[in-house]
Image 1 (cartoon, rainbow, N blue to C red):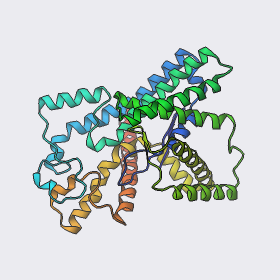
Image 2: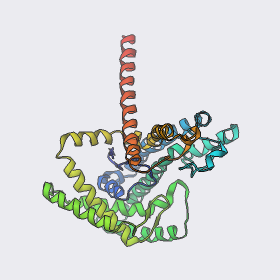
Image 3: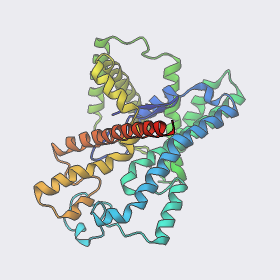
Image 4: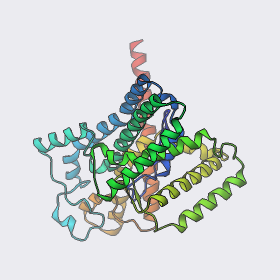
Length: 358
C-alpha cells in the first residue's frame, strides 16, 4: 500500500490477486487533502485540470498504448493467448481468448485509449485514473460554481449537493447506467470528497497522536468492519452499493482505520520510510502490478505442470494460500524495483550526456 500526493491525495494501492476496486475510504482521504484554493478562481481550476491531465490522462495513455503495441508479442509468449485449449479447465480465464491485432483493430483500440477509454487487460486497474480524473475535475468545477453562489455558506452548499448527488447515484446504480469516463461514479465520490474536506476543516483527530488511542481506534474499527463482512457490497467503478447508509458507515469507519494505522506507522521509522517510498511510486505499482503477477504465474506453471498458455490467466492462476500473499508481495516489490533501477539508469545517462556536452 502506498500513497501519491501532489496537492491532491492519490489513493493507496494494494496489489492483491482479486484486485477489482479501490477502497472507498481513500476518496475521503482525497477530499481531506484537496486544497480549497483550487476552486477559488477559474484560473486556479484550469491549472488544476491541466495538472490532473498530466498526472492521470498522460500516464493512462502512455501505459495503455505501450501495452497495445506489445499485444501481438504478448500473444506469442503466452502473456495473452488465442489457444482454444485455454478455455478448458485453466483457472483465471475470465477474459477468455485474445485475438491478434490488425491495422483496423489497432487503430480502433488506439482511438479508444486516446479518448480515455478502453484500457488494456494488463492495465485494467487504470480505470481508476479515468474515474479520479472525472471525479476531481467535476468536484473542482462544482466547487467553483458553489463559491460563486455563496462563499459564506460553501460547506452547507457542498453538503446539499453531496446528498443530491447520492440520490442521483442511487438511480444510476439501480438502473445499471454506465457513462463515459466513468462519470457514473463521480456522484458518490463527490459525497466522499465533501466528507473528507469536512473532517479536515473541523480538525477531526488532529490532536489524537497517542499510540494507545490509535491502537484502540484501529481495533474498534477493524472489529466493526469485520462484523459487517458479507453484509456490505460497494463497487465505485460501476456505482453499485448494497445499501447507501452502510456505504457511508463503512467509508467513515475505513477512514478512522486509515487514520489510526497511518498515525501508528509514523512511530516506526523503517516502516514509515518504506510507505513513504511506496507513496512516491504509487503510479508504478498501479500500472505494473498485473504484469508483475505473471512472474508468480510462471512459477506455478513450473511447479504444477500447467501448459505454457496458462500464463494468460488473469489476473492470477492459483490464488490459494500462500499464493495470494506471494502475488501481493510481487505486485508491490517488482514495480518498485523496476522504478528504482530505471531511476538509476536515467541518472547515469544524464551524467554521461552532461559530461559529453561539457
